[in-house]
View 1: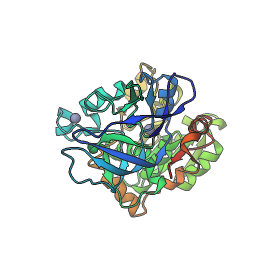
View 2: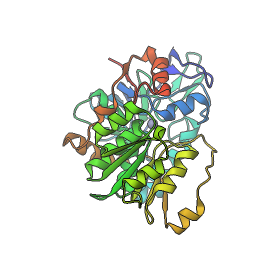
View 3: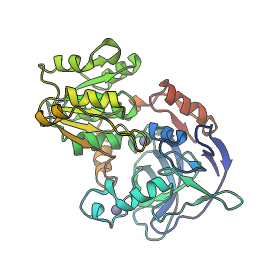
View 4: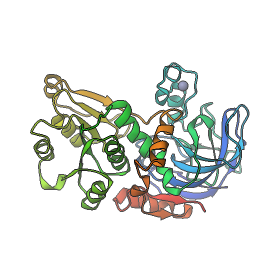
Length: 361
Ligand SMILES: [Zn+2]
Ligand SMILES: [Zn+2]
């Protein structure tokens, strides 16, 4: 089976013919139909998220189940699934206390580039193992833990973005910020995650302000449901957002970029007593300065948010899609074949595509 393999950081991916083992206990083998290209994958390609090569990236997809490992119930070959990039072990302290997105065994496997048991099912003809980044879904086949997928009734390509962009948005808006109807929510960043945040927050009845630097993306943000848009190219965004919120600031600011400047803006613009939710990822080890006195005297709650719970939240999210409350197709406008993977990566990096999708058939 063919897969896009990163052999050295900062170099193009190669399409290689790899061997794939059978799924072990609790795992399934899937055949992706469509897979998203996300900024977290770019961090792997650059070495900012240092998964040792060779590694197959790709961590959100819709796929068909082709084989089911021992102990897997509720899934059979032929089922259509949407993947999540988090695979709860079901047994650790986080899993049994309802916070499976923080699963300890998953967190340990994540940076090793393996499945939950610390090994990978991919290898070269000579037997050398090939790692995966949260699924290894830029491939014709993949083995993933069954706990990280959910059955869906139709495998539309745009549903690929539910697994990362929308699950991240759901976790930020619903679980972390606990957005209520009428709340004013500023979203900094208009990439795939930022757009999904706007979509979910609007669906919950929030008044959304989108902040970004790309005019076209800000227009998409408006169509997605942002009531106001603020261009970072037109001056002081903190002042502009405060002016739109009685001078006080929004009750919730969701930061979906992950750089010092926008984290600072989030802390400065949030209303006293408000919440800043951080979902934008930075390179591992990066630290950011914040305005401490403002955070303290303003009683600001700063929350880091990582994904959402695949076995609990995905069902709610998918229900919102089926009822027409949110629409993932808005952030998907460019499709590529697997052998065009480097073009897809470049389209994301340059901002030409919001969320490139690899189509496998
Ligand atoms: Zn992602
Ligand atoms: Zn766990």
